[in-house]
Image (cartoon, rainbow, N blue to C red):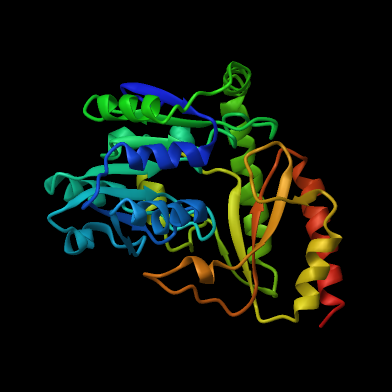
Length: 319
């Protein structure tokens, strides 16, 4: 599906992210990581990588070709995530890749949101494509898995790293991924359609400041999404106006078809209050009110909209 040279499986999505970095760094190296990166990857970069003697610079996800200004003589890799899993910035991957390759750096991409069905990473200059297969590949929230796919140039280093760190994955979990792949295209098309319908409806509510969904025409990343992506998944975020905390709590509590969950990509719809403030160093998260992240599952879209409508009634009773 990815169109790469080889794929390697790891016990989790985070393990795949970490192995992809470790395969190319040594003491004294410098790496560039998007400021919208998955939180645990930032924790790894700020902890173990520092102890290994590897320096990290976080960059604005929208930097594009200007990433050239941050590349140092010892920069060995550029880590991208498009879009970010909370704030959903769409990065200009071809522009970033061109500058990285000109400097001899490897380009890594977390492609979990779109999957290779909706973003052809290697066609856009990526060297290593990473998926938290726990999400859309598994598809049922009942197993954990990470997948790393490499091009011919990066395959030897990745194979060595995965074996050296003993990244052995259960055959049962690999089977669960094979099972999920059989229905992945059908599921993703449903997640896309339902997520977009929910996003459009939410954008019309007076209490909503903005909906962050790359497939919405008004989204900051829409033009890049339309140019480079073949579809969208069911994950997006919603920023509210400045409302009393009790109103947001009532909104979340009233939802019956949306569970609270930190992961996503399964058949069920999820909602999660988020605050990206602490996860930013190169850019600043600015919002008038609280934010939530939504994953549109496979339930009937009219049922989900009715659930949302009832939740907004509860929200409005608190201001």
